[in-house]
Length: 428
Image: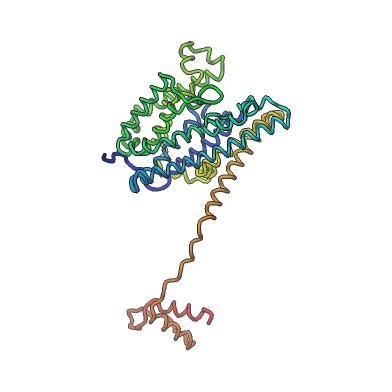
């Protein structure tokens, strides 16, 4: 089949790093209950939140990185490189999984607080540890806040054939993704969790955001540019953002929610995150449209130093995400053990973000140290006749006098006086 996708332009897209850093910081803050600082995150002002952003950018980046490889070196090479990435994600999840449950268990035992075990969904480890750990390896058992990474692993694991087809029929794949999304919602398809229930992030539904990111990366936004830049689309996006803000605030504040008809309030509250409600996906798509319209890839503001910490956290996204999930538990426990005051909430929030940023900078620095040092540039070789002339003059100790232009018939090139002076000043 003919390639119909439009590959992204060369060069790193700092917008991806910036917004991935924003997602990591927001996920950390949102995972800390009773924290006033998480009011700065987007989940409080619209239907979508950092999880939507994380999944979308994951799909965009996967296409951005592996599409060209698959075209140039074939499906097998591109598919195996994607599989290698899936293995890295799986190992990271297992390491985080073990550290996380050990930390929760230790805290519960050390401070005689068994409620923490129930709160973070690790009670099964007490009753049936072997089976619970086995189910954890199969991604079915997930403590609280460890749901995003298994979703990412599944979507990436199934992505090689999807990417192969999207390079050839991008619009058809996007339509197929929509069909699967609505079918999953209608027939209530989801994966089973352990010990009961289903996945918090339904992969049959959340695949839509992942494929949408890939579709945007492979020319979807280019083909839709006239619609994105239209005045009607701009007004629709702004109006929908205002509507989403109002409905979200209605869900946050009961007195405000009572002002609306019950049928309207119930249509958007509670926000269906598990199955990625259509109004949630539309809200995120609206944000994508506005970013594409007003934040181009070459926007000079991306080079502002104030964005450096966010961009660095986005560039080291996997490690920063894992650290952030663990730190969110530490911060939650600290607030439980302390007064939980406003100052304490601000301090644990700032400290966690600072530690995540330090980790990102360290990993970036460490990767540079692993690369071989570039050899020093060698001086350009001098013509034999010119070098001999300079050496003769230096040995004679005779001053060459003022340089004469070459047009005066000196017989010496115009660069010779400078080379002679360098020869006299250099050690013998």
